[in-house]
Image 1 (cartoon, one colour):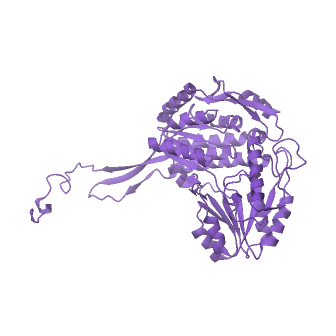
Image 2 (cartoon, rainbow, N blue to C red):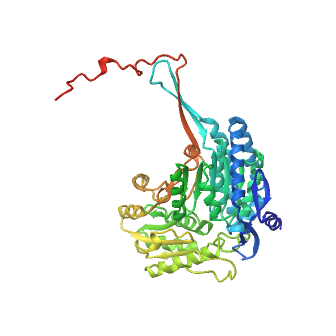
Length: 505
């Protein structure tokens, strides 16, 4: 019952200036356990004055933080990671109760978060600019890296801790301050998780609860200097447009509809297991989930048979039990997802497994793990993000058709192919229009490798060295220590370099 008590103590709170503070506002949103439909707490939207105070605090603290040497920053960030791991049992339970994912996935997410913090604690020390070969005799030319200032992080509910740390760790290690606006569906867990950042100077990491109005003020305020947003395309476009008007830096990640290709050389049993995992992890609420399957016609039937077999083995229930898949995150997500399935059936898809709600779970926002067969490539589900546990399968004649259909999308986040043919592997790597390509290894991440998409899946990268530079300016400096006269460049210009031709005619 420790998690229940934590929800109660965090109800109606923000983290401002290094401490929890009772919210002064009156716009209240109920927090509901998606597995039980029990009311477990409330969040209160931050008022404009509270937001302005947090921004002012962040700017003050950031200037001092930027003077702290990189070795000390690393030590403090390692302590943040240690505290995250120490608090993992409580935070994982809270995350499962607040958004529904199985406890194992919640515990993994805390571990991934700590890993990202440890990674950036060290990598930020390794490269802070470079020396250039000077273009002028006797000079010293070099670049240095500088923080952007105050970074706003606007988060979704599906991976609220992991995405927070992918972004916040890079931002903080670079010398920035951070203000976090969590999803309304995972705010209480985020407030608890953020206690690990108390190892840092007070006010360097702040958390403001609330909905769209809170995010809008954080984005539009001239004293915030970058926005990292993860969410839907429409909101991401609004964030990008607002920041563009201010020339404010952005990191935008806005959904996906990732293809999953299976070719005849693939080990079908392994590919089917990978497909089930890629489609159903976190109840399909993954931006890089496998959402549309293109299977070579010669292996279509045996592959689908195996996929249905492994789908039937997915255990569905409360994430605190021994299960593989919890509920969708909210009643709104449930209703939206069921409409997606109905539209797929109207478009000609045939339900091979699931397709509705499990009779074993009368309460909560549970749905079946679903396989759809004979799905036409023109079906809406093959062209829009489903964001739920469904695997729609389409047969293709060859790799050319699979690649064509995979790329015929407004999205470009990730893509998977199963094949043991080296030529097919390299064609996929070179031709798939995606930010990430997984060959026989779906949905893996690497702290040292960039994560991000193309097309309307967003812009910018997180993780890796690229993710560090997302939160830094690069400054070029040139020094002439002798303060020489640059007569080759300055006035008066040489007469010999003047125009020598006729002035008339």
